[in-house]
Image (tube, rainbow over all chains, first blue to last red; front, side, top):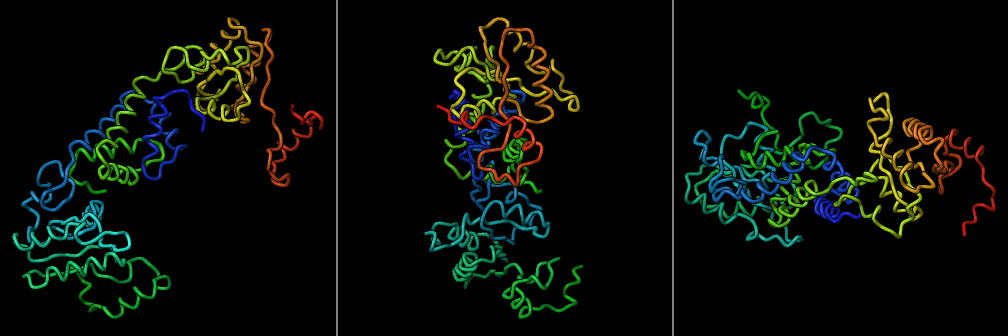
Length: 206
Length: 206
């Protein structure tokens, strides 16, 4: 691509195109858009990115993002301090929160065990989870990892690490997704949902 | 979407999602990506955006973006100072430059006349173009606007404004695009390319 003879624009385009999913053409479009806006728009964007990266850290307890040592979830006494939902990453916290069905705390692993990608158990926050179970009054661990090979491997590893400790270990129900046509459900999921069929009356939640 | 209980993250997501084509989900993905990178990555991005918006202005002569009063194109004595290519916007300068066929200067209109969108001739840089033609030693104006209704309207308006002045007014050739199958060329373009057919020997450029 040609240059517009402006090192300042080139620099902004180069930085923008480092973002995932943003190529040089899109980066140029975004930069030219920012040039057309009020100065405040560009300043607010730039400063919000800098401030965020400068001041956000990770909760010492659950490893979710936080602006203080302990995150608002862990600090919220209205939340059930005895139930901890284990998720892969920060985004999954949002996803679980959007269901409004989990009232407890979180534990963010920061990844899944994946020998192929070179991620071993010590690379993710499993030891700190075991420590929490030993030190806090946790009665239930909900494993909410993706139903993939890596998720299952990590589930099983955590299950083994926690065995012997007085904590109930549960995992997300797997089965036919609500709203999906049975015809298009994959055989593995359908097969498991037959094996793990539930009492019809159990579907009447309060 | 739920909040992650972080005003700093929320603010960055809100600012990022003001960019064209970036929704809240993408903005969140970008923000979380930046949180995972080295601090420098986010700082460089933020600062490059701020510096660009702070210091880039528009060339007093051709209205292209510039870091000084007169842009490097206008200041470049190796470029033909007598031929001015009129384009709609800054991006079109890049597009024309990428052909390496224009050795002259530019004039960026900053839009096209469009009564439907409320853009009148006084909203774009036409008067300053007429002024340049009168004051500078310009011998040719190349109209390089999009072959749309707005482009044609603007072409015709500029043509009338410049009539009587000693300047040659040319426009981009219109015809069958190189590499396109004749079968898929629209009738209007094909019809015009028959009317404006050129001597076969004229296609042998030096």
